[in-house]
Image (cartoon, rainbow, N blue to C red; front, top):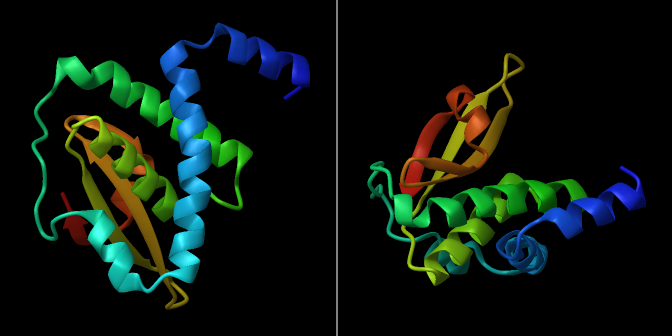
Length: 147
């Protein structure tokens, strides 16, 4: 994508889109470094209540924010591929949704390849919207969820 097109995209985006993109550009690298440097027991505390899911009922009041969060996380993954694995994206999204008082559920799942290797994936849902990683969720068996 050319610089001109990026500037045009930035200028035509809403204030909420700009704010969330800036926040996710800070939060994703933070959570990525935290995953590498901190004990996993500390990271578990950020995920929420284990074994519980939030409601899947629509919430029209927060729909614009949830959609903007989805777009911001997609853009962050595009521009910061080293800092934006699925788990860091979900933790950042959950953190930013929680700051707005919007409930969400983080899922962790695994898939066994034909070669016998295990692959993990994380995805985030808020009400009836998949915020991050939801497109590949059918390939994985859910191991745990956190609300």
